[in-house]
Image (cartoon, rainbow, N blue to C red):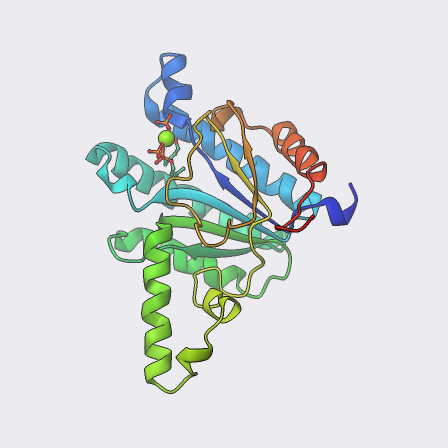
Length: 235
Ligand code: IPE
Ligand code: IPE
Ligand code: MG
């Protein structure tokens, strides 16, 4: 694929694990476990395609409202998978970052997050943002707080604050904006994901549940993106 037709930043709302499991009379955790297999597959596919930044929505600020046993199960799965896979990702030059609020995240989860981020911090291959306890509105509020603090500390003049400067206070900092946003499971909504960064993203919705989103499905999304005409308000 032409590199100018390739998105630099792809973001994915990985949805439908529970319904995938339910459809085959399996308990919801089975859906999450199968979803992890697709996460691995899509990270490899994105790296091979030459994507610069991949952002995966793993747990939202709203997901704490799920039944306690599902939340606990997801936390345990996250610890296990991250503990097992960080070395592989590191060997492949992937830089892992976490976006979201640290508050509410259990200590044990924070430990594996910090360890994998530190291990891979110097890597220059693909950047993998894992959105965990992430909410886009919380991100914007956090950015406003940080801007205010910097201005008070004499960092810069608020009167000349522009979009480019503001965006550097977001969790994604200097990263390019999202070019392609994918959502699986047939839902047509954003669910509080990357509101600022998707302003001009191309949207791709598929009825496939996340556990069915194979590398071929990912490649189909990239193909579709390559055929889109982006006008940015021009003609
Ligand atoms: C996405 O699948 C995974 C997370 C939000 C953690 P869901 O768990 O939302 O699956 P559905 O939408 O209930 O099918
Ligand atoms: C969005 O999926 C969050 C993640 C994929 C982590 P949800 O299943 O939580 O979103 P809603 O409830 O359908 O909006
Ligand atoms: Mg869902």
